[in-house]
Image (tube, rainbow, N blue to C red):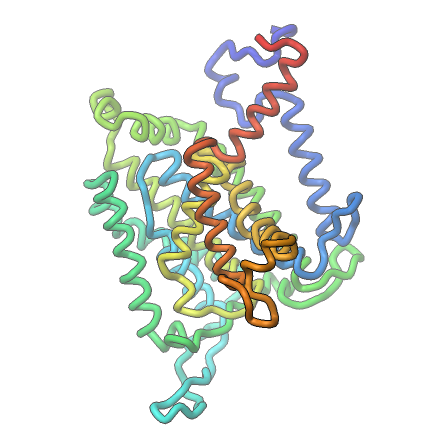
Length: 395
């Protein structure tokens, strides 16, 4: 085996998290580089500052939610269009438990700006509201699971889609908790045992801005929850989910409880979404009930499709691609000759504005990946890796 390090000779070797020292080394290098950039370092032309820092912090938190969706859709094969519902539950649970009670501005029937008391807030520490955000979302997933586990395919997709519209109504009408439609509320206070992530300050002797602190928190949570998902995938539960995804009837014949493992998938996925929802909007500092609609669910479906289904790495790649690189790609394309004629500029000329052009490019990317690269960005990486491992031999 010493001369064949990539050869898997037993089940224990097949179930390890990292199969080779090279993988461990690359993970260590990526983590060190990410921490170095978070603390304000520069790697060649790369430096996280300004808008790039905000986009990166948003992508890190979105990666946690994408991993959660990959558990239920990628590993268990249960198509869910209701991820926005669980994100919203986690976000508003965190805002209520970790936020402050107060007044929120609103418009009366005459269109005048008034203030009314609509907000509940308990100002609890992050060590309480962050797990609570995940647990409340997981409880919602547990309630939905008995219905969802009886369905599959298109029927399951429509049931989970109904959750989004149900949540949209609840978030708009529950003003005491959410602030109401077009009003919203501020996010939870990002304070952990007296250390404030939502305020600039020193960390290990280095002065960090608010977004740098949030990015540091996101990296720690992403590593923890990514490794937890990776361990879930290689466990007995993960193998049962994969069997259900590949052929549920055969899995049931082999003695795998479909209801049990589908329920586990929904609950764990909802927990990840709740935690990510509680953290994601801390970057902008405000929650809007309208933000948790159907387009948000489509965004996360696109993340796992473009990144790679049933892989933790693919979920992270997809989140970074859509949340960090796609907006910058649109800005770059908008400045190219001929393209700037299509996109509306300051003079108001053009067929589409920047947001519409981004949505069009977003749709084209989904179609392209589904047709030409079903394994997503992770599949492209696998092909590149296998090419260099086999080079210069082609067989």
